[in-house]
Image 1: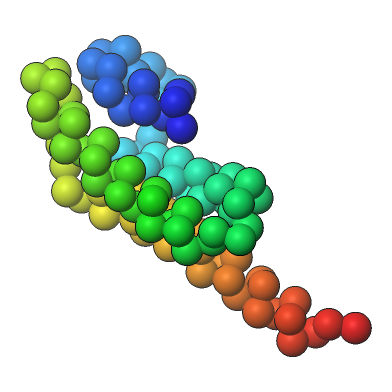
Image 2 (image 1 turned 135 degrees about the vertical axis):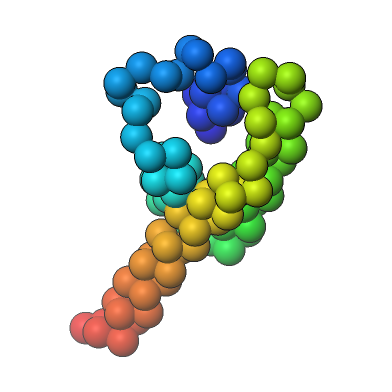
Length: 104
C-alpha cells in the first residue's frame, strides 16, 4: 500500500513511463484487486472490513490527489478502485462458498 500511495501521489510525469502506460481505470482496478487479494490472505477473518477499508482508501487517495496541485482527484478512479476490490471480493466469496458446499 505504501508503494501504491506514493505512485498515486507523485506528479504524473514520474509515472508516465511505458511500464505505467496502461489504461488508467484498468490500472486502478488491477491495483485494488491485488490489494484485496493480499488483504484477504493477511486478514481472512476481516474479509469485508478489508474490502470496505480499501474502498475508503481509494476515495481518500482521490481526495488527497485533488489537494496536491499536481494531480487531479477523479471520482471515476475511485469507482475503478471499488470495482477492483469488489470483483476480487466476490470471486473469493464464491470460492469460499464453493469450498463449504463441497467439503469432504
